[in-house]
Amino acid sequence: MVFLTVAGNAANVQADPPDAAAGQLQVTVDIPGGAAVVQSIDQEKRVIRIEPPRPEGRGWVVWWYFKVSGIRPGETITIDVGNPPWSTPERAAFSLDNRVWTQTAPGRQIEKRMVYQQRVEGAEAWFAWGPPFSPEDAKQLVDEASQKFPAAVTFELCRTLEGRPTPALLIHQPGVPDDERYGVWIQARQHAWESGASWVCRGMVEWLISDDPRAESLRKTAKIYVVPVMDIDNVAVGAGGKEQKPHDHNRDWSDKPHFPAVAAAMEHIRREDTAGRFDLFIDLHNPAPSTKNPFFFLAPADLISAPRRANIDRFLNVCRLEISGPPKFEGQTYESGQRYDPNWPRISKNWVTSHTREHVVAVTLETPWNTPHATPEGYQAIGRQLAMATERYFRESPRTP
Ligand SMILES: [Zn+2]
Image 1 (cartoon, rainbow, N blue to C red):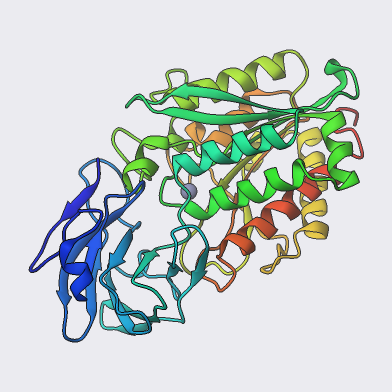
Image 2: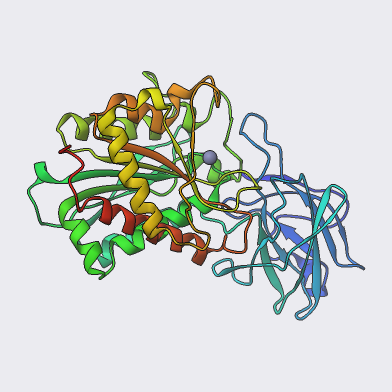
């Protein structure tokens, strides 16, 4: 399913629109994760006006992503986007092949719109809120990791409510005995619009399976689960996901989870923790438009015992050492408790904090999206640095005070 509204003239969803050859701009959203309401296309001035779709019950209105064809190679086209500030990054994501993503120049804010101009050296181009990362990309990431590296095993975390597979990866190289291994759970995209979180996750995976001796040392001492996209259904259809009906994935960590991905994640974490093999939980997100540096959300202070506090402090310290960005982690943390959200006990890292042994660290990393670094390379650098922080953290056992 794709969300599509055709307004005015020739917007349609055909793969090869007949008018495109004649230099008529055409917008296509029939791509995985595609989303845009086309408000108008001015063929004279070469201006495409869009806003994000508002699919009923599927969460925040932020994400947009579409293909443009009918471009006269070398011409500058204008993309004019509504719904500021969440839908209007300073720079939009731009690609000539739907694979390599860069950014446009900074847009100009004109009243309640953001206007991006881009010279395009090709007949087609793709534009998006941020670099897309689809369920197919998640599958490709875990498959490539397992092909490249035999100690990485792909598995299907679950089938979603709409029947889609949820790709996952377990990294675990022969080394120390199983019951001495550190258990790590890494997940991204409980909120579908936050595509940068999946790129951070990708950066972690690529470092974890790399030849870096530090990565090898971590693989031999830990068992690392990775889920690049938790809310597959909303990512697949280009919906926002956050605050969807009846609630989103990150308000679902309860005795009766609604989403199969959450139920499966809880089961794995519970099992490893019961066996005394769980140590670190990292949930990856993108924050508000004004955020310029990465920060962590932590569980409410009154939920955190002294041993847990000591480990959290140590984890934050290694993150300060390793996450140099850009943008750099400068030690900023916030609590997500009662004042943040009355449903705080059902936030994933809060659930993990209250349902695991006292040494376990559970955090949410928020990586900013409204910066020049919110590219695949920039996000992956943060992921790599976070993985290096994880390796540094486990140089000391978190299980012994
Ligand atoms: Zn989020």
